[in-house]
Length: 158
Image (tube, rainbow, N blue to C red):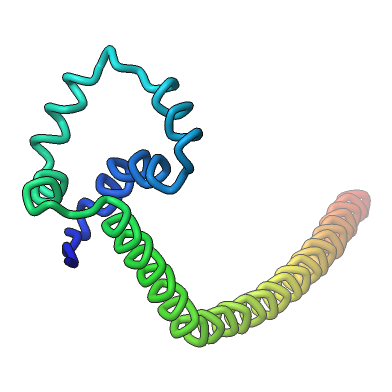
C-alpha cells in the first residue's frame, strides 16, 4: 500500500519515521539495545504529537507496515534527489550562459574604467598645462605693468 506524502511535511515524516526505520532494520539484539537507549519520560508527549500528526495517524489507522513505509519514504527521497539533480543539470546551461554574460559585462566595465582613468589623467595634464599658462600670463602682465610703471616714472623726470 502506497501512502502519498504531503510535500510540505516531508521533513516531519522523515523525522518521525527515522527512528522507526532504524529500529526495524536492525537485528533483534540491536533492537533491545536501542530500546534500552530510549527515554520513556516524555513518551506521553510524543504519543500526543504522533496522534495529532495526519500522516502517522493515517499510517497507523490503515495498518501500514513501517518497514515498507520507510522504504517508500526512502524511494520518494531518492526520487526528489534525482529530480533536483535533473533540474540542476537542466539549469546549468543557463547558469553557464549567465556566468559568461556577467564575465563579459565585467570585462566591458573594466575597459570603460580604464578609458575613464585615461581621460581623468588627460584632464589632469590639461589642468596642469592651463595652470602653467596662467602663471606665464601673470608674469607677462606683471612685467608689462612694471614696464608701464617705469615708463611713467621716466616721463615724470623729463
